[in-house]
Image 1: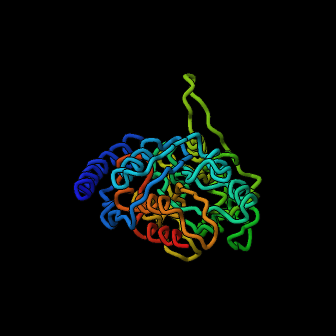
Image 2 (image 1 turned 120 degrees about the vertical axis):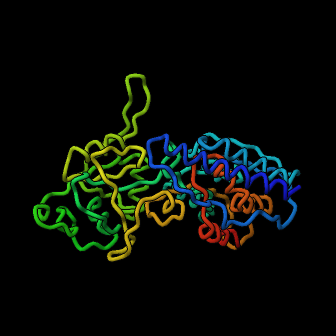
Image 3 (image 1 turned 90 degrees about the vertical axis):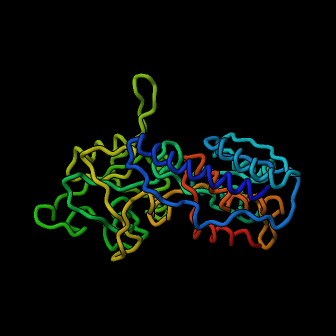
Amino acid sequence: MKMNVLVAAAAAAIIALAGMAASVHAAGAPPAPHVDLLGELTPYHAAQHVGGTIRVWGNPYIPGLVKDWEDGFRRLHPDVTFQTTLKGTEAAMAGLYGGIADIVFIGREPYAPELQAFEEWFGYPPLGVKITSGSYATQHKTFALMVYVNKDNPLAGMSLSQLDAIYGVERRRGAPAPITEWGQLGLRGAWTHRPIHVYGYNFETGMAGFFRLTVMKDSLRWNPALKDFDNGHTPQGEVINAGTYILDAVARDPDGIGFANVLFENDGVRKIALSEDNGGPLVEPTFENAWRRAWPLTRYSTAFVNRPPGQPLEPNLREFLDYILSRDGMAAVVRDQAFLPLNAETIRAERRLLEP
């Protein structure tokens, strides 16, 4: 019976992978290449039979994925029941430290106040385990960010330290001075003293929060010259993502730089590569690099549980997280066609977090 479930999951994953590529292309982003997203992963094997109730709170954008995880787990552990309340990412952590949730799914990076509230209550931080990567190019699914310049700008790429020196004031990545001219990034001739005009998302958005956390190392001090954009609306009331406005601005400004997603590209802009360190290899913002988490601005979603330091997880929670972090759990992510599944290297790292 278990082998039949695994075979069915693998077959469905192959079908869904083709659908994923089609859906990405339809959204205006480049088609996903043929990548075996599940080939290196191992199937779920239960360490023990478990039962009881698992109370789930979290992100309302993933009800289908959560149900798939729960249904797949219950086929192997029929004595487990789930009570699922997906009121929102913002309410999820409160459910955990309020004692009314056993596991919470947060569809973005946790905010510092959320973690601080838990730690102030219990005296230790919650255990966070990555359960998916963010999407490459799917609206509302924690999509990756890319850095853009005007199409006429010859810059090939830059380091995160240089990007921090453009967007941030504190330069926590160690840049010796602010970067305000293109010549400081190696451009010569007419570009040497041209000013860098900076564009980005409104500071209160999740996209800006992730950029600040990842690039600026959680600094709150943005470049005061940054022009930020918030979402707009069509006359029919449909949301226009701020990324559209950011990249329109960069297309009109030969000296502009902005961060957004491939969903909002236009013919007047061009993605650039990034490196983790000065002098390090430049990484292109491709689908495969996002899945492999080689692209540094790839996001993720996280499950949090309450585990006191040095103590084992409740057996049913441990088994459920083991299931999610298996080929079976990642096949559900692929079928859902929203987020990217975790790769084998990331899963190994997350599994180590489950040990006391």
